[in-house]
Length: 230
Image (cartoon, rainbow, N blue to C red; front, side, top):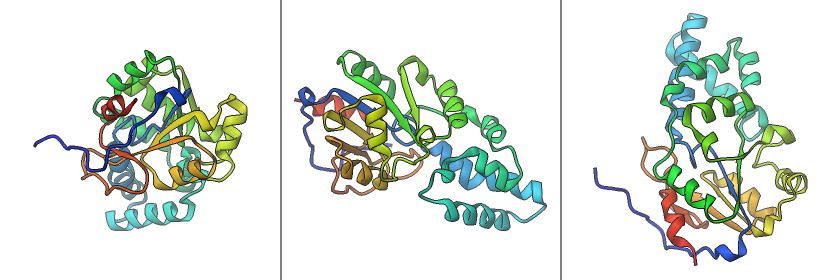
């Protein structure tokens, strides 16, 4: 298969105006194919086995629970899912952790940032238990010194108030920060909160086609950010 090329007008980043690089994890640094497989296939299969129901019924069970919490912190909370399903969701994630992998050029990009003398911070909605599993399985800990879960603030990244709290606690000037994420609602919230530079990842899941460009500057792979600068 030929490489997927950028499908949007290139937008330059003025790195001299950026002190902090804030990076999402799932879909930005890590391939979202793991999460999509886990929530859409593996978990329903386990629910069906556990409750002696059809796979279709299990899919419906997971979907209804997902819809009831979408946009809130509980949607990302492994403890909440475990309680509602009566299953150890953390243990289930560990069963398939071998499928966790970095997105193309992730390691190269993080190494490049390290030499840029920028403050690089992972900011994720992942539950701390999920964060620990993914960091260990992917090797991200070798590249990142600061890793923050939104659960520390009791707000998801798409919830108003999150970014202001993050900026205050971590003493981050949001206006001099670049934030990279694949989620449009999260980016919209970051924009409202005064993030200086925003970039959307358009190909978070290697098993799917890239998303259509939006009003945010977009990239397919992280190495594009290494040539966008001025």
